[in-house]
Amino acid sequence: MHLQRVQVPDFRVLKDVNITFEKDFNPRVFPLGSQNGGGKSTLLQLIFVLLHCSTNPDRYFAIKNLLNNFTLREDEDKRVLAIIDIWDGEKTINLEFFIGGDAYLQKILNTEANIDSYPETFFILQRAADIQQRISGFTRDEEELKNIIEQFGYRQSETTPSRKFPDDLKKRLLDLGIDFDSMEIELSDPDSLSKINRHSKTRLLNHQKKLQEESQILSDRISKIIEYLKLEKTIYINYHFYNKVVSNELEIEVLLCRISNLETEKWQEFLNNLSNKIFLAAPSTQIFLFLSKAERNSLFTNKNMYQVGLIRANSFLSGLFTYDFLATDILIKAFKNARDKDFKEALKTGKYGNNYKKLLQDLDFLLHDKQVNLMDDFSGLTFKLDRFKDSIELYPEDLSHGELKRLSVYVWLKYQNIEDSIVLMDEVDLALHPDWQYNIVSDLVEWVPNNQYILATHSYELCQALTPSHVKVLEPKLTERRSD
Image 1: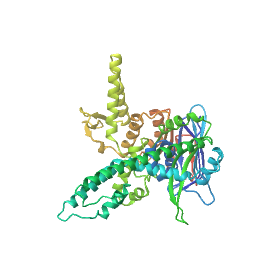
Image 2: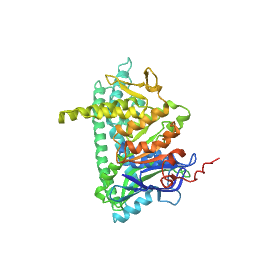
Image 3: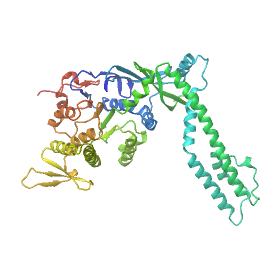
Image 4: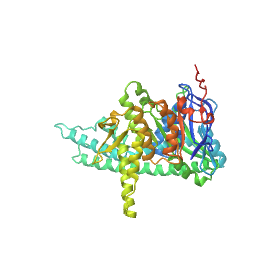
């Protein structure tokens, strides 16, 4: 996979971006520079979220957060977010991501469906999402009903039981789709509690059944909408809401992607594969636009909340990595993985492989005068320093930030088996000695040579390791470094 070109007309600080990453360049490492606040991080995150999250509903939260405040302008029915060209090894595939309003969808559906109107397209999408959310809460609804009946039973067991069903419990039943008054049950009836329980369960089940039936009907209609969009070489990704400033009305817009130079039947396979071939590495202190607005703001007020939000997001975004600390557990897993490979090779050939030994040698080479020691039970690791006459035992916290970062990047690339991929790295030069900044280019190429690396950086040393044509710059351009 190779990201060949990216165009962003107008997104946050990015204006008229048009950058080409030549697929024939060797090495395929491209520094991305700009002034502070020039949009390097924004561009990397935009590319990552669009390519990594568009095919997986569990990741749609990242898209919705990213698109916060990105809406149609007056008199627009379509607004382009980004145009990305991907080389798949044989041809260039063009992906145009854009948001569309109801007028845009109606125009396509009226043309392709050959009908005068396709009623309430956006209502269908909204209603389907609402129903799906209700269906996912069926178990919770059943627990709520059980709690309501128990509370009423407890109140009726009091010395003077009520002759009227409590209004607060009646409202909670109504929230479940159950109208108590329509049951016409007399509370003076000794068997009233049992009847309420039985009738409520029946009505809840009927209500749930109706929701499931409506969900299926809407799903069929959405499938037809999606098929009509395909005739326009367009796929539906997701929708989001926003309030119109003037009228304060709730509007719905959809994120769509037009795919060019690829057969329709291959779209899903290509996008799924691309999703698994895009990675983003960045400091954990970076402001990630795929987090909620509250979580982003908490970076300045409550760092614990921000870290919790980042960890939650990371659990869904498998291509995300924060490399400003050594993930000891990842390193231990890398050793376990190498051990397991050696054992499988022994079962297959009768001789143990050398994956474990090779990993150990690589890490020792990376750390120069330090050797990695793994505890016998694989519960932790230490480092032995042989710089002095007597060896000194060190722990991960004793290593420098630069050593930890370099080791983390290596382990991440190797442990995740990141190959033939597009690797976006933000501020990779931070905490590295100038010599290491220069060498990080050759390091990456040596560690995994068949990846494309796009490195957002302020480091002149890193840029000098490549030709001027490799270096891509966002406007406003950097000034030349003074020689005096």
